[in-house]
Amino acid sequence: MEPRPRCPFRSPEATGTGKHALSVGAVWDFRELVFNPAEVQVFGLIGVQRDIMLEATRTYYLRKQLVLRKVYKPPEDPMALAALDMRIDEFTALLDVLTGGWFSQQASQ
Image (cartoon, rainbow, N blue to C red; front, side, top):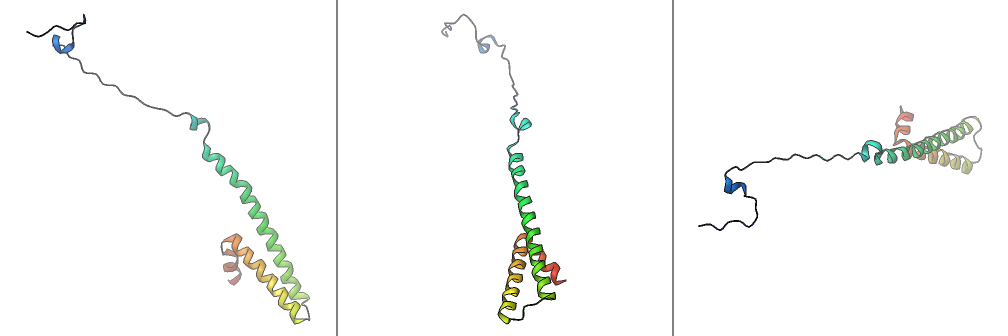
C-alpha cells in the first residue's frame, strides 16, 4: 500500500485529472520609444558637418585668391613665385582632404 500524502490536497496524478498549462510572455522596452540614444549621436554630428563645410568654403576662397594673384599679378622673384605655388598646392591638398579627393578630380576635368 502507498503512503498517503500529508497535505489535505490530492495531487493531479493521484486523482487522474492532470491539466496542462501553457504560458506566453512578452517583454516591451518603451525607453527607446520615448528616447533613442542613437538620435543624440547623430544630432551631435550636425555641428561637425557644419564646421567641415565652413572650413572647406574658407579654404576654397583662400586658394582662389592665391590663384587670382598668380594669374593677374605674379611675383617677379622666382622664390616668391615658388612660395605662392606651394601655398596654392597646400590649399588644394586641404580641399582634397575635406572633400575626399573630389576637388582635384573636378579641377582636372
